Length: 287
Ligand code: PMP
Image 1 (cartoon, helix red, strand yellow):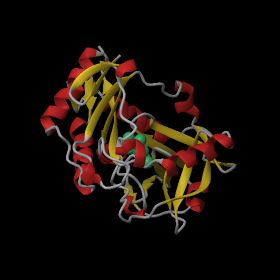
Image 2 (image 1 turned 135 degrees about the horizontal axis):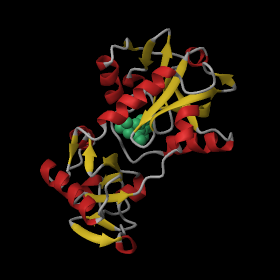
Image 3 (image 1 turned 180 degrees about the horizontal axis):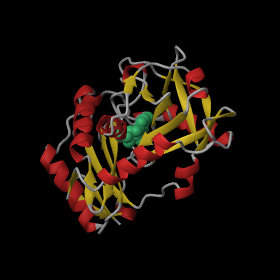
Image 4 (image 1 turned 90 degrees about the vertical axis):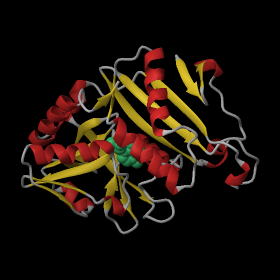
């Protein structure tokens, strides 16, 4: 496995970052998770836009131009001869001293990892996941805007811990006002009376690339769609509930906090959107 690390291609054993890196010390950095389908980087532009916007927002200078970054990703894929898999792109503030001051970090560090992806078995897509809501609250937009895909994932990790503890497959997070925001690492949608609904990102959800692709697909197939705040009650009484994300694609929740959703299996609209999504994954790519 070849890993891109600050301009070099190194083996997994040699892919090491300093303990003085501010990504390690403070979670000071950003990342992207991207899919490779048939050798294509899916939604490459959208992911790079989000990465460079996140960087600008936290005043992080990425030492590669947009095109250089795209080329470094493509070269990492080529060196690993990967046709289908996952790309993890990490840009940290870089090597500094123990103080938090980013001015002490001379240059951001860029890492590109390409790996096989362990995905849910196909049965899980047909049945869905058992899910719970969790007590962790998503930060409402402040300095750490949910649009920034930062390395500060402790909140999400705590959600995962609670979800694991309950034996659930995914968890639903709310914001401090009680509105549903997203899953531990996925966006959430509900379907009620034939209308597709997802929370606005300003409530505290990442603007997921898969989320946006699903909204486009809904438009394409003539499925009514609204972005609207909703609560757990709306989730419990929804006809369908599903999550979207780069790794998960589109996966249903058949149960939320003990309430069965719809018929207790993935609903027809969820499956239709998954099918449509799988038809577009080969397109929109960068080789
Ligand atoms: N929300 C969070 C918190 C995430 O980390 C992710 C990505 N893993 C998503 C939503 C889904 O975003 P995307 O569709 O861009 O993968």
